[in-house]
Image (cartoon, rainbow over the protein chains, first blue to last red):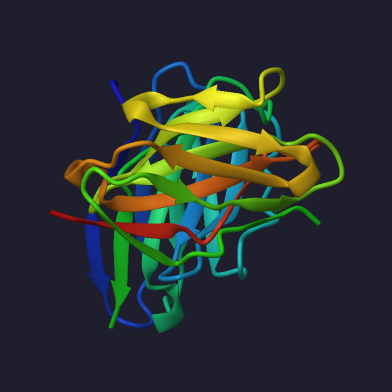
Length: 115
Length: 113
C-alpha cells in the first residue's frame, strides 16, 4: 500500500478483555516495529520484526503482550487481559532494512482505551 | 544506555517568529539522529535525519537541524514559523548494534496567529 495502515483507529475495551491490533506495513518493507505512545512518555519500543529472523521482543512490558507477523507482511499485536495502564496509542512502523540508519515510516496508530 | 532528552515540553511562538527545539542525546559514538513531527491524530512524519557528513541538515517544510558533537545536541530550527507547524515534535536516536530508535518525550508546539 501507499503507507503503513493500522486498524482499528480507535478501540475501547473493558478491563480484562483481550484485544488485537493490526498493522499492514508498506509493501516490500522487511522491518516492522511496534511502539507505544503514552501521554508525556514519548515512544516506547515494544517489538521488532526483520524478515524471517526471530523477533526482538525485549520491549514488551509483560507476558500479556505478544505479536506475530504472518508471511513477512501483516502484523498483529495482542494484549491479553487488558489493564487500564495499557491505555495508549499503539504505533506501527516499517522500513526497508533493519539497519538503524533507515528511515521508519509510521502508521496513524491505534488509540486503545481500557475502561 | 542511549537516551534522548527534549527539555521543553511545550513551546509557544507567534506566527512568523523563529523557532528552535532542543534535543540532547546520550551516546558513546556518533549516533544517527532524526526529527519527526506528529500532527493531531496523525502518525509520525520524518522531517530530517543526520547520518554523517555536513552537520547542518536540511529537511522538509523549511526545517533544519544542526548536529553539535561537543554539546551532544541536535536542535531543530525554522526561521519563520507558520500556523500549520503547530504539532508535536520528536527527536530520536538510532544506536549502534540496535535497530531500536530511542525517542524523546516530545515538544508540543503552539503557534499564535
